[in-house]
Amino acid sequence: MDEEALDPLQETEEENKMLFVKTHQRIDEELMGEITFHERGNVEVKLETTSAMVADDLGLVHGGFIFSAADYAAMVAVNEPNVVLIGSECQFLSPVKFHDEVVFKAKVRHKEGRKRNVHVNAYVYDVKVFSGEFKTVITEEHVLKLQLQKDGIKSKEIAEELPLSTE
Image 1: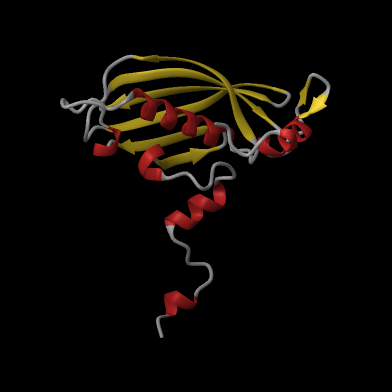
Image 2: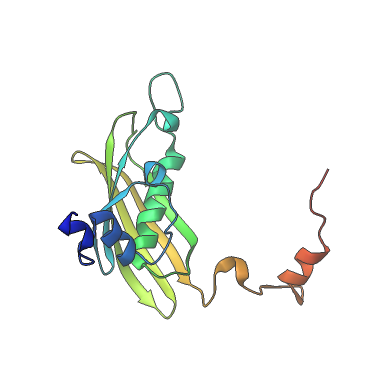
C-alpha cells in the first residue's frame, strides 16, 4: 500500500487553499480565477480567459468577467464567511482578450467596524487593465438569511406572500 496515501498530514495544495479560504468556497475558478497568493488582507488571483468569456469575433473578453474576478479577489482578501459587496467604483483601463492571463491583486485598505474597503488592480503582463475600490460589509448571518426591514415588514414575511412565478 502507498505510504503517502496513509499519511493524514499529506494534503494537496488545493485542499490547503480551500481550508484557508473562508468565503465564496463554491466559486468556479475557471470563471473567477485561481488564488495564487493569500495572506491576511492581501490576495492574488490569476484568471485565464476562455472562449466562454469572449464577446465578439475579435476575441474581446466581456468586462463582466473581469469585474467578477476582481470582486472575488476582494472577497477573499476580506476572507470572512459572510462578506458581501455593497458598492464599487472601478475603471476598465485596457481591453482584455481571449487567452490573456489576468492577475488580480487585492488589498484591504480600510477597516471600520464591519466595513472593509478593498483596492483591486488587474494586470495582463505589466499592463494595468483594471482598477477598482470595493466596499464590503461583514454581516452576522448569510445575506440571504438576514431579516431585512422594508416598510416595517420583515423580508421573510414579504417573501412568503409573493407568488412563486410571475407572468
